[in-house]
Length: 421
Image (tube, rainbow, N blue to C red; front, side, top):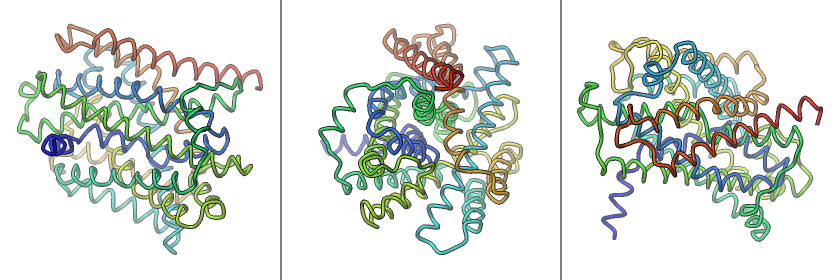
C-alpha cells in the first residue's frame, strides 16, 4: 500500500502543476469576489467543473502524447490559419493581462506582511521569475513547481479557521442555484473562465512534450504514440491536479462567503481586500495565510502564464521552443517569456487598474474557452489524428457539456447585460 502511494505521488507532475497553477492570484481574486458577492450560491460549480476540467485537460495531454506536439502545433495543421492566429492571439493577450494582474496581486499580498514598497516587490518578483526561467533547467523548474503547489493548502486551513456553517455549505455544493442577472452570470463566467482556462490547455499539452524530451525523446518521431500505462498514469496525474484545484476554489468561496458575505461585505474586487477584511472577522492568522497563499501560487502561476504564451507563439509561428532548450537555441521562445513578464511589470509600474484586470481577465478567458473547448474535443475525438486513443463516447459527452455550459453562461451574461439586468 505504501509503495503504491509512493509511486502515485512520484508520478504526479504536469497535471498537478497545471491544476495548482489554475488557482493563480486572478483565480483566487475571482473566487473571493464570488464568495463575497454571491455567498455560497456558486459552490455547485466547483462540483460539476471538476470532471469537466479533468476531461478537457486529459484530452489536451492525450493529444500531445499521441502526436508528440503541443495543441497550437496540431491546430495549425488541422484548422484554417486565420482561426489559429485569432485563437492564439486572444490567448496571448489574455495571458499577458492576467500575468500583469497576478504580479500586482502577489506584490499587494506580500506588502501585507513585508514593509516594502509595492513597486519594489513587483520588480523583485518579475525579475526573479525571468531569471529562474532562463537559467534553471526544466527538471529543476518542475521540482520547484511541484513543491509550490503546497502553498494552496493555506486556503484549506483558512476555511476551517473561520468555521463556516457546514450544513449550508454542503447544501449549496450539492444543489445548483441560478440567478438570472447580468452581475451574477458575469461572476459565473469569471469563475468558469478562471477554472476551465484556455492557457492551461496549451500548457498541459506542452508540458507533456517537455516531459517526453526530458525522458530522451528529442525528435518528433520519437515522441509520437503512447501506451496504455502512460495514458493511465497521465489521467491519474491530471485527475489529482483538477480535484486539488477545485478543492482550493471550494474553500476560498466558503471562506469569503462565511465571513465577508455573512457580515454584509459584498463589494470587494481582489483577494487582497478579502485578506484585509478577514482580520477583524477571522483573526490575523487567517489574513496571513490568505496573503501567503497568494504569493506562493503567484510564483507558480506567473511562469506558467508567460511560458504558455511562449509555447503558443512558438507553435503557431513555428520557431524553436521549450524550457529544456538553452537560451542560445531558443532565443525567440525565451524572448516571448521575458516580454510577457516585462509588460506585466510595466502594467503595474504604470498603475494600470489591476483590480479590474484580475476579474475581467477571468471573464475574457471564459469567453475564449468556448471555441477552444470545441476545437480540443474535435481533435481528441478525431480518429485520423488519435487512432485508438480517440476520446470515448463518455469523454465526448463531458466535453460537449463543458462547451454548452461555458457557451450558455457567456451568452446569458451578454443577454442580461444588454437588457440592463
